[in-house]
Image (cartoon, rainbow, N blue to C red):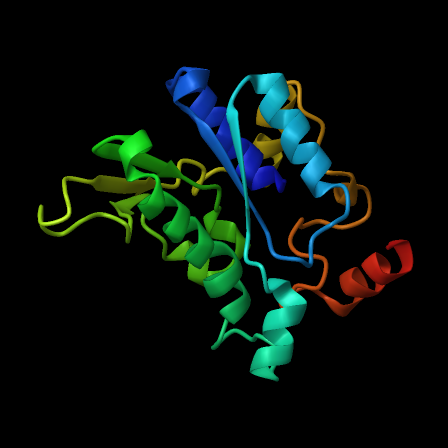
Length: 193
């Protein structure tokens, strides 16, 4: 639902037929209430396949089990509620995805020091190293790494997609309770939701 993901979606739509695209969205349990609706509307409008992923425990359940908020050294929210369920879905659906897959995501280098170091291309962790379980090669492409944020909004307009409503009052669309968000953002989200 974030604008950088919109930029990555724009790239995918320019390079692949809609029937080849699966739009994955991970609901962490700490998302904006409108996100599911926006996700399905986007997929229907662009005629691509929507895949909504959720860990049954959600953010609150994992927080209760772990008894510790995520932080920069232990981002369990991303590990369990985004990366883990995405990898699980890819592995479970290798037969419908085919032997070669391109996983596309929207990150930009100027968002953080960590993202500044990301490669544009790499093997995805779901790639099979041997053929014991079959052939499956998944590459990870981050096509918008070196773009300015404003270009992401332009890509959204070219797709005829409105930016997420949260951009009306904050500069970054992430989970509503993101531990990396400024306190003022979280406070504004609490007031609004």
